[in-house]
Length: 592
Image (cartoon, rainbow, N blue to C red; front, side, top):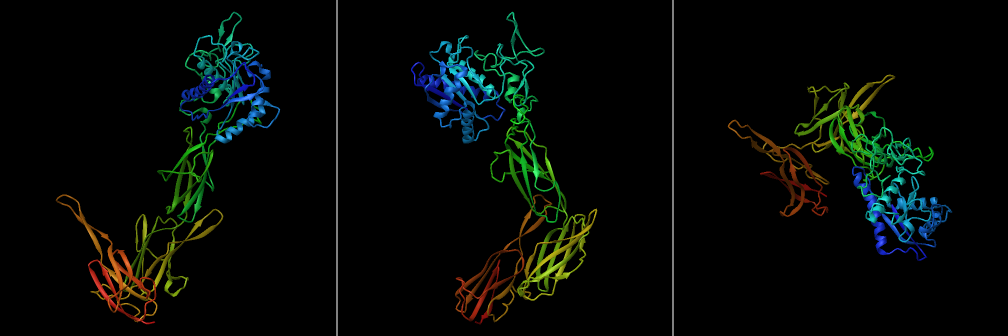
């Protein structure tokens, strides 16, 4: 909200520093009062002022039907183009403030200095202050009219200011007056809330209240008294900050958000890696304001604040919007799932708006019509390469083929090593498969993958699917003597690359649980392995490998270069391998 303090070029009413401070203090206090009264409402008020804005008119000496003249003067001074209409100009001014401060609503209060005016009122004397119902502005004197209860003048001004603010947000007057045309049957505001606190005065002066309703103290009919700034139920409802059901969420924001998924809520996929794109949407409570035409009536939704999900009941996992900021009524979200199991996976997404209203969990069901491969193991032996793997949750009576690619030959084509494989072992949860590939050349690199086939019956057709496992690489070993650490280097002599296989000793760490009957177990750990090349004079040439390996056979390659990756000359070289506590040296001849 913006408080504008006009200053005329006359001398009858001139603002001084104390008056300016009092007017701004009272305006600020009115906004704070609403925040304190409705603390559970996500209400943030930005207060700003424009002080001593010049006008050739003396505002306090004008009547209600003349205020538009100096209001237009002030708007023109503040850079609003002439529209020959005070309402349109103030609307434009408010919209500029709203956009700049990224606010939902904006209004302006024009505060006229009334220090020397009769009764501290405007020229027509029959009102203290007024606001256009629903905005865009209100008009106030400072001080705010008479002070019949001898209350602090700034407090009187502040409570009147608060009263007029309520009009900006569609609240109706409740005090008895012949020009106050609302009745107990009136409704107003976004929620079209009832007006059951209306006070009328009978001919004999008796105050009458709405039948069947106990009157409540309220600033809408006792604004100049020091009563603690009460806001009655009906005024709160018309402003839009009522919480009728007591769930600590204002009724105006008490609408559950929703989630729309980019694809169908039930979806069949053929990959265990799935990306789900969705949009969280905050839905508005319908604007039912009876004072607005259907064409002008707009419904507002609370910005979103959070989202989380569960996967098959496990979670929650919290989500961030794609733009990394929760500040809109619609936010795009994404979720990447890897390795979902065969069958149905349910993702339940819940979103929340800034008022704390949660959506119902919105469920997307993903049916993975595929094959889940697991525990793929490659074991290199002297006789060949042993392969084993499992399928988990096989629901489709799949058949499996094992494929091999001879990477050393440069070919990208695969050959089928085994078709329609039978499991070596079956469990209620998985099937175990194994194949020993003995048709290998020493030192060659091979790639293996499993391709599964299955069919699915649909109402109109039957479709055959296929699903490949990941591809796994292995280099076949060179023969290693029973008591040796390494094979001979091959080929020997060599021209481009030389290979050596290493039987890495298995290393374990032992542990035991306490007690007399403790059992001792061992856990495999990696063994330190280092492979270096030296020339015939014993000088270091290159480190081929330095790292840690689990027990088993590994094959390594030297490309005939030194530590700087420069080609070394022909000659005799020695390859020294250290693996754990074992070491061995092999001779190799390089021929250029």
